[in-house]
Image 1 (tube, chains in turn orange, red):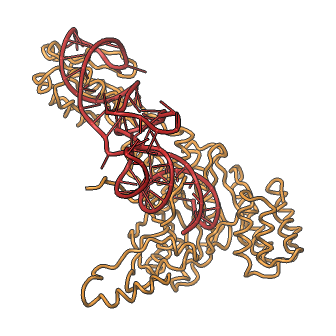
Image 2 (tube, rainbow, N blue to C red):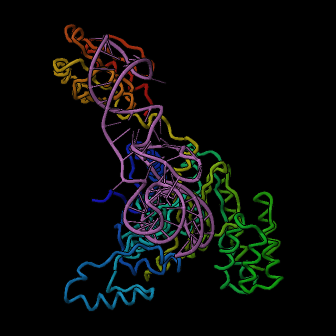
Image 3 (spheres, rainbow, N blue to C red):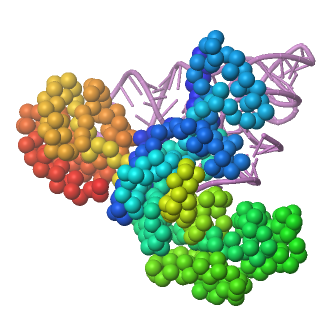
Length: 461
RNA sequence: GUGGUUGUAGCUCAGCUGGUUAGAGCACCAGAUUGUGAUUCUGGGGGUCGUGGGUUCGAGCCCCAUCAUCCACCCCA
């Protein structure tokens, strides 16, 4: 036997980690439901053709494919060889693989809507919290298996949806205590107007990819990248002017209006952003004209959430409006808008900033300690009595030195010890010791329940 | 996919220019004391030095390969 291990980029979650993750997940889920979203879950795997081509060329390479079963069977061997030859040229073949692990939640959701649009009530608001898989090389804040939390509204073009999603982001991040997070917005329509002003709408993707890197590689490098796209000097200059726009949200909006006086698309994008900002007055939203986002299906307002500057971490959430997501699956005319929370990165950020509340680690309220077998038999029924009153407790199952029993309680961060010795047994009492303060009281056993119900109500949830 | 970092006990690490039975702290176990948790004392278990080759009289240390790890790029949450 070789040493056991787990696949690269995957993780086991200990009790401590699970509790912290659940703290994040339940906060997000609670808010999703408060805003009227209903859950959806889709399979871990999809048909490969559902996913291929939806995430761009790079994305396709990062999809985890599942090998077909039964390739060794005689009747399948020739086809398997054929499929393998094809795979060696870099192409996929259904002869070898026809299923894949899901890469995100949006495309499976679009597939679901396309399959069920006759039955769904629109506007359809769903949320989805599930793991996704990417064959990326792991590094900081990047895993091969991670959890996404998405909320989307489809079948509505109203900007109220964008406003609500922005408010939802704000509620979740403030409830998690993530002060200093940044919610950036922009509109793909402004970027599209920019591409148009450069004379070629086809360049939109190339331009967005280049300017998205501005804060990372700097203006000069961005200009070099733009020139490689065969843009002329005046066109690069135009983009530079665009990127140099600065000031408050209102000032930026005015500058954009001056930059594209003729563009109907720019006007539309500006109006949408203005409306969104009006609907979300009081929220700390920053208009970031350099925000582009890689995914090509976005067509309107786009969002991105950045971690507080004190932590080095990429985006911890993002989303935007798409006009025609289900069009990929043959169902036209269902516009939508959605956001996503990157739970694993939020976790890393909160860990770095020590934002997890201590009480998350308290599992059991009380541990029953005892001096010996007779004592443990005597208190055993009382453990059940407390449990039936919703008080989490446990009995130390072995006869051991008190030292050891107390250490056990200490390690499990159990706040109370109920100590049972021969003297207590004789008097039908017990000692309740508060393990945080060291204080202890001697109380009759029949008052134990009321004691803990009172203590429990004082503890945070 | 490209480039780099690291890999010694359960954990955190030390190991001088290659030289005898590879060490420390914490953790763990046992014993002493004790009706109360980071007290004290005594003793103890545990490491194929990531793995496989090579150089050498001799490798934890040098060379090659491989795996894992972390980081950067690409891309992204």
